[in-house]
Structure formats: structure tokens, C-alpha cells
Image (tube, rainbow, N blue to C red; front, side, top):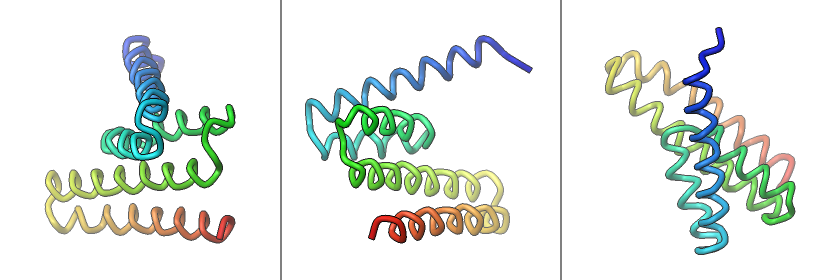
Length: 117
């Protein structure tokens, strides 16, 4: 079911991340971009990757920058989710969740380096 208030909050959050990512790239260059993507990745990987895709489509960042930053966002988000799973569900639950998340991260890394060696 559509929840307008939640949809609005998500849209505003994504817009803010997009603005922060673009502003950090302009102001601090590649290092600023990576730091901002990593910080945003703690909470969500989708927003920074959408922002990166927008920058890439506008030819503001290279394909290599896009892929590296996307992997940073996914990696940080994976670590955050593993930490949360262990903290809230205990070691046994957390390790099962981490196994799936780390497997997914390994596939993302392998695919990236297979396509773009």
C-alpha cells in the first residue's frame, strides 16, 4: 500500500543525498565523493548509487569512479547491516545474515572486476 508520508520522506532523503554527493565532488574532489558515498552507505546503498548513476550519466565522473564508489556504498552498507544483525539477533543469527550479505558483496566485486579488469 502506498504511504504518502513515507514516500515523501524517502524522496527527500534521496534528494539530499544526491545534493551532498554532487556538492562533495565539486568541493572536495574524488576524496570528498568517496567519503560522502561511504557515509551515506551506512544508512542506505540505493541513494548514493542513484546519485552516482546521475553523475555518471552527466559525464561528471568516469565509469571507474562510478564502480569504485558504488562498491564502497555497497561494502559499507553490508558491514552496517552485518553489525546490526549481530547486535539485534545475536551471533548465530548475525552470522547467517552476514554469510548471505558477504556472498552478495563477493558477487558484486567479482562481477565488477570481471567486466572491468
